[in-house]
Image (cartoon, rainbow, N blue to C red; front, side):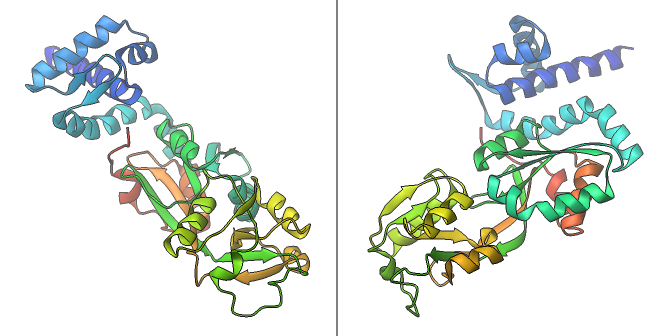
Length: 315
């Protein structure tokens, strides 16, 4: 009996430790676990005493990890999350991808242009699965993954954090779009410098497209101006068609109808391709519903290692 009691205490200590690290303060951890702050503090001190080394550095504003704490967190987080999700995972594995819920985080362009056919095929194959598409930008999508509020994300990434697995499956070229009567429409062999006199219509600065366009112009020391900053590819294409400026867009948003009203030029010579892929948090249990969706995209796209290995989160 003493042995089982000890294991029970160790699980409580590890839960207190993981929640404190994840939420940043003893107060938030106590609220999440429905315990008092002194109880959390005692469990943490007992854990440090039993392991024989400090795990946390306490400051007024926030809790930070020691090197030993980092090591323990990477080991303990999958254990705690696995225990808490045991019932859910058991029933998910037992029933397969027949019923349940799947939440996918993605940006507007991904939801509008990349996911429709995949969602249609998934709904036809698994009609009883409740599918939710969370329309969020990159950082917000990562936040949903880390908070376990989304199973996977689909989108484009430039920098991949250590705690995130990303498997690209589709690439798109960068495209210059302009109205048919634009001075550049009839010119062949466009150079980056040819774009300088004309105002660009770009998405907001916080988004990847703006950062990539700015990076290319800066690296090549070519001046450029932004005439309009606005969100949404459809809005940008409409404004370009109205003659309000030109734009660099990702090929994912170019439709056959767009090619009838706009002049489209491939700019891969100057701007990088954009890769779109499946994003998930390392160490997260991949539900049958999520695995089925990924297999629909490309069987074996994410290896078992991708979603079974824990990584270092960017806290």
